[in-house]
Image (cartoon, rainbow, N blue to C red; front, side, top):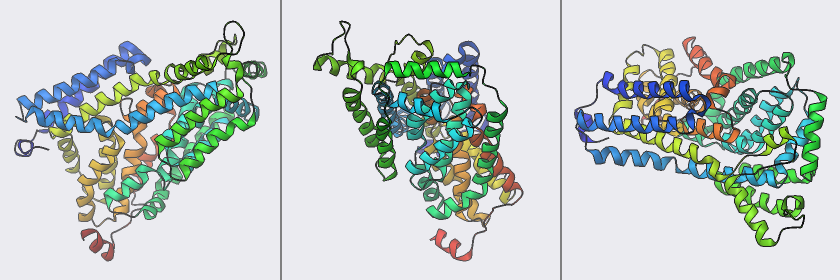
Length: 490
C-alpha cells in the first residue's frame, strides 16, 4: 500500500461503494443472462468495477495511478499458476476422452454404482483422492468429470452431482498435508502443520458427517427422473460402439494420482497425464483415427487431430444423443472465459488492496469483536469477504491471517485457532464465488454454473457455520500456553 493511502485512508462508506456496485452489476447480469453471466457479462462487471476503484483511488484518495496499476498487475500475476493449470486441464479433458480414459471411467462406474448410494460414494471417492493428491483442482479435473458423467447416466442433475464432487474434493484439500492451503494457513497464523490438521477435526468431522448424511438421504429417497435400466444400457452401448473400453486405460489417471501424492507439482503431473492420454489414444483407440474414406489416417493427420482435440476439445457424433452430449467437451479454448474471469477478478481485488478499501472493511468487522468466540467468527467472515472481493483463496488466507494474528495473541488464543478459522472460511468458500479463481475453475471444468451447484456444496456451506457456532459455544477453542506465547512473540 502506498504512503498516501495510509495517510488519507478511505472511510467505510467509500470502501463499501465499489463492492455494492460490483454486486449490483453481477445481480443484473445473473437476472438478464442467467447461466451465461460468466461467459462475458461478469468479466465486464469486474473490469468496470476495477476501473471504478481506480478512479476513486486517484480522484478521492489521491493515490498515484501507477501505484494502483502496479498492485493490480501483481495481483493478476498471483493467479498465473491457476491460469496455467486451467489450460493444461482443458487439454487433458479433451485428450482423456479421445483416448477412452474418461469413457472407461464412466463405463465401469455405471456398472458398479447404483442411484441409492451414488452421491455419498462420489463424495467419499473425491475425499480419498483429494487427501492423496492434496488438490481439489486435480480431483475435480480427473475423477470429478468421470463422476459427473456417471451421475448424469444414473439420472441425477449435474448441479447435485457437482455438489457431491466439490464437497469431497474440498474435504480432502482441507485435511491433506500435501495441500497448499493446509500448509499456508498454519504458516501465516504461526501454527504447526500437523497441530493445525489435528485441530481442524473439531469443525471438519461434524461438517463432513452432516454432509454424508445429507447426500445419503438424497440418494436413498430421491428418484432420478431420467434413470432406467434401458437408458443405462443405451449409454453403455453408446460408449462401447465409439471406444475400445479396457480396464488398463484407468492406469493413466492412477499414475497421475500417484505422482501428485508423491509431491509432483500439479502442472507437471497434469501435463504428463495429458501426454499419456495422447499416446493412449494412438495405441488403444484406432477407431478415432479413421478418416472420411474409412481408412486409417496418415501420421500427420493423426497429429492434427490430437492437437485440435487438445485445443478445441473432443466432439463425438456417435448417433447416441445422450452419449454425444456427455463426451463432447474439454479443450484449452474452452477455458478462455474462465481465464478472463480470473484476470478481471484479480484486477478488481488488486485495486481494492492498493486503495486500502478491503483492509478498511476488515477493520470495521474487527471493531465488533468482544470476545474469543466472536474473534473466531469475525475471522471466518472476513476470509469469506476476501474470497468475494479479492477473488483468490490464497489472498483470503494471507490477508486475513495477517490482519487477525495480533488480535488472537491479545485474546490469549493459540495460533491453531486462527489457522483453522482461515481454512473454515477462506479455503472452503472460495469455490462458492463465481469470479473467485476456485469457483471459476470448478464451473469451467465440471460444466456447471457456480450458482447452480452452490446449494449442494453441503460441506463447504456447513463448515463455516459449524466453525462459528462452535466458537460461540467455546467448543474446540485452544488457549495460548505460556511457552507457545513466548515462541509466537519470538
